[in-house]
Image 1: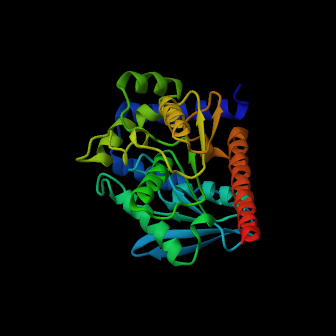
Image 2 (image 1 turned 45 degrees about the vertical axis):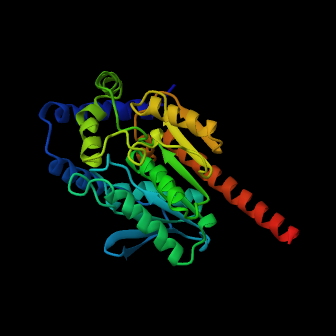
Image 3 (image 1 turned 60 degrees about the vertical axis):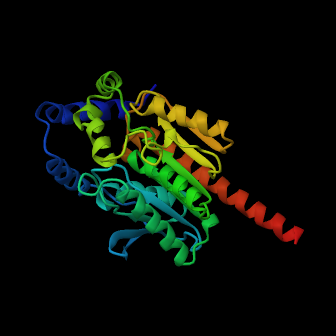
Length: 313
């Protein structure tokens, strides 16, 4: 059963998003509101920020004290490909970096509808290749993202595979958006259960904004439709009650059938984006601690492989 804190969060979201469902504000208004709300975030203690520009794209390093210099988390924020920024996800990236003891690179990729597909994917590829040019080894990089950012992380893996480029050590999807085709009845049912959050934010329209001239079923837009062989280890977290849940389960089943090492963690009765509320919701802290445990296992496996290769040589 969800915690009391989560139940309170759900009630607050209901009160906050009811007017959105009724008045349908413009995207510009929603973006402004998201930026204003982000001003109230608090960063974890001993996590430091450094601005960086990657060929014109704004990004920032999120560096926990004591994190090893050679390993990095590339983070892609959520927001339906139309919302979100470095500001809106800074607290989440900060606590995730601290729990994983990784320096995180967060990027402000371009958003639809001004910059539809493949702009966001191109920016994710740009950031990944920039890390390689900075001297980071692919096996020392984990890619992560939430919601649309989680789907973008998966699309990044697919694009790297098709280009014949080296894969990162692993990827993490926090409620990843794996299928932009969302049936109306499903949206209405789950949005009601999720306190109107997703319906109010018109997520079904955002997919069309992002895909633009492409069909929503394109595999780099909806990774659930891709061939999934050859991907690195994946951790995917999802709530069984959120609108993206069924599609994520289909993706997980397909990935496992393709031989992808996949860890699927299903939480009960939580709203979409519960990870963002880590300061208040214990389930969010639990989920992020599990991401940290996954990253430690990835590095342990990498170290074991390196020792074995050295012994064989």
